[in-house]
Amino acid sequence: MGSGSRTALVEDLMERFPHVPREAVFKEDLLRGGVAFDPSALSDNEGGEVKPKSYFIFSFDHGTLPELGEAALRRPPEEIILTGGPYDLRRTVVSVRVNPSSPYRVAANEDGVLGLYLDGKRISDVGVPPMPEYYRHTLASGKSVMEVAPTIQWGYLIYLTVFRVCQYFGAKEECQYCDINHNWRQHKAAGRPYTGVKDVEEVLEALEIIDRYDTAKTSTAYTLTGGAITKTVSGRDEADFYGHYAKAIEERFPGRWIGKVVAQALPRDDVQRFKDYGVQIYHPNYEVWDEYLFKMYCPGKERYVGRDEWHRRILDSTEVFGARNVIPNFVAGVEMAEPFGFTTVDEAIASTTEGLRFFMSHGITPRFTTWCPEPTTPLGKANPQGAPLEYHIRLLQAYRQTMEDFGLSSPPGYGPPGAGNAVFSVSSFMDSLPADEPVEV
Image 1 (tube, helix red, strand yellow):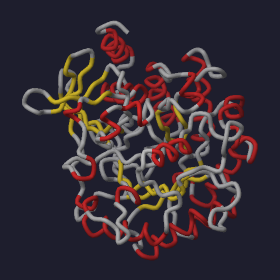
Image 2 (cartoon, rainbow, N blue to C red):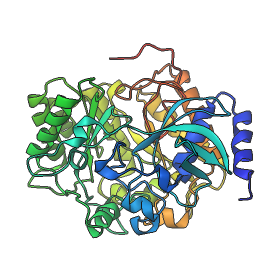
Image 3 (tube, rainbow, N blue to C red):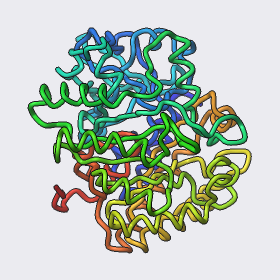
């Protein structure tokens, strides 16, 4: 892209979609295309003052570790906060996805103050998360809290990836946009600690440290997640495997955090077990709405469960959790991924909106993660640019409109909605919802 053209594109979209907060336009562009880091903006890993990127489940990078240069040795921050600048941005939390060739760059000026630069112009101030006190303490085994129980969303969410690989394995089963298995392999190859199956006692020990030092009670929720389990892990099926962590956490820390689990769409009896174990929110991710794309891009899910059955199970799970507490995720942008995706933004938005209407008409509020085209995945290789920014901006508009059509408000367990308030960092859906509704406790 020529000099200045990215700025022109962004400003054009802000003008054409005035109802989408301008903060969200920048946030989506950073999430879909990544950001470069000047050495002055990298962290000193776990010995520094800045909370480093934890690689909590996927790489969320546009290069493999060896391709990231210094950012592979000194990790970038977990997230950045954009404020001020010529666009007068309200406080916007953005998950960090590294791309050394991005037109966006985080660098310090001559006074050492970090800023975000686009086409060579400083467009906002950048805040970085301080190193939390609980990251400075290790478990008895010597493992770090960051490895066992990292926090994201500016400290709001403890992210417990208790199973680091996925049993949908290989080209015929892995979701085509997902690098969970590669991310595991690259951390191993780099000699980084990356525990495959997290020991329940170690998880409790890490939470004990967080609970002791998080005196402000910033951490409000935990998510239990990991790869799909088609057989068993440590002799447990999927519901029992993820559920037994929730049970242990709720017994040790009753009511301290909102418990969430991301798992497959499971039969109702299995979902009931999650609820019995103390889980409050269930995320049976449906990934992509279109029938053909689900088959092509989620071959393992199609083969083991099937799309129609997946959706039926999502609806059934509302009888266990209540529709408000069933929040399936989709990966926004893969709708437009070659070779099988939609070729126009109109078609992609129409398809995704059909999915939103399907779930929202049942009182279910899906959420979404902005697709990061990771280079080791088939779709990342074929679509290094991801989906067009216009798709992401129009999705935010369609999402908010559909919620209003069905009289729904922002889902629980995500922190506050509204530009300037939201902490959810992997898409702008919370930034683009109205801020004035009472926050649910």
